[in-house]
Amino acid sequence: MSRGEWAAALGERFQHPARVISTGFAAAVLAGTALLSSPLASASGEPTHWITALFTATSAVCVTGLVVVDTAAHWSAFGEAVIAVLIQVGGLGIMTLATVFTVLVSGRLGLRARLFAQAETKSLSAIDLRRVVRNVVLFSLFSEAVVAVVLTLRFMLGYGEPFGRAVYLGVFHAVSAFNNAGFALWPDNLMRFVTDPWICLTIAIAVIVGGLGFPVLFELRRSWRRPSRWSLLTRITLGVTAALLLAGTAVLLATEWTNPRTLGPLPDSGKVLAGFFAAVMPRTAGFNSLDIAQMHSSSWLVTDLLMFIGGGSAGTAGGIKVTTFGLLAFIVWAELRGEPRVNVGNRRLPETVPRQAVTITMVGIMVVVVSTYLLLVLTPHSLEKVLFEAISAFGTVGLSTGITATATPAGQLLLSLLMFVGRIGPLTLGSALALKERTRRYELPEERMIVG
Image 1: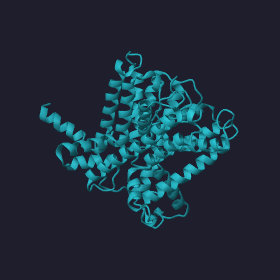
Image 2: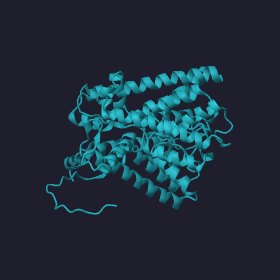
Image 3: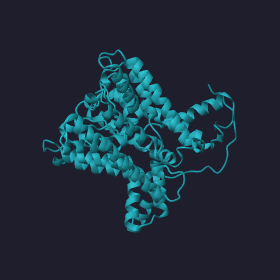
Image 4: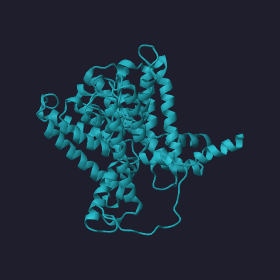
């Protein structure tokens, strides 16, 4: 094959935006693995095993937070900086950053670059994507700066950290929180701050804002005083998010209130704060102020559900997304009422939207079930712990019952793959792997079938 034919074949294979996004994330993971494998990245000065480096790089780029080594103890300052950069890259999106670089270099965007950025930012139109991407980057950096300032002041004034160390801790955890990554620089994550509202509430707010999704945040900025003008995306995202946070907090407080290994020893105000924090983190952040391994099985089940749902679309969160979960309720309601179309408020959904919601949910369930089965084969742990870990990886959450670090190399590689699939989305991955999009040019005869 000549160079021209090879270039044409390569261009044909990567003309789909989803395919380029998948390749971009994979390239970021490989680059992070190479950097974290170097002796400079470890505190001991020795090279890190490639599986550990790959797992950590995948967890950072996919903004998950699952770890197999103590972040603060194993990695050097260089290694921690690499992790922070990978989190930022994964949070903003490979194509968003690529669009920014294209604008800086050429001052304009071609149609293909616009389509790539649209696929990554989930923009509702391809108009003025340069402005959209610029706003995404600026808002992200501004939010992280605000969180970093609050955390820095708290570490300095409340815990006596030197200025340089306080700034370092503030910036790292601000990036990790806003991008819903869950990486922390203490062996117990954030358990030492369980009753500190300045730390916990600041990080929780950053997680919620980062997980709402950029389209929702920009619409709120434009018309936050006029809820009647909000789009369906904003209404469903805010409504389902509020409902999940309230329900999650109430259920976790009820189940863990007297648990002597979690909320039991805390004062009432500390219990409420810790319960709220524990309900926010399954939005795919992964920080924990309580020992997850010591929670009741009923709390794990609730957390499983919250992790699988995740956060908002086109944000830093993972999971099937709160919009998908909300649409499923309207789909069920329409079927129960015998309505041929799905209506939400005073709007009718296109026929493709319900199919997409059901497909995303079913693909997510299938991925979690298959991964759970394989992890049960590869590890000696119980079903409830393995299921928790699989959903945490797929939802890019990062919460753990403590079995990730002790998993076999095969188990860690499987979790790495699961994090990657969960970050770019099952449908994005599927379309990236498909050779061609096929459109049926004819209709088959209809035949009714018994369902249920």
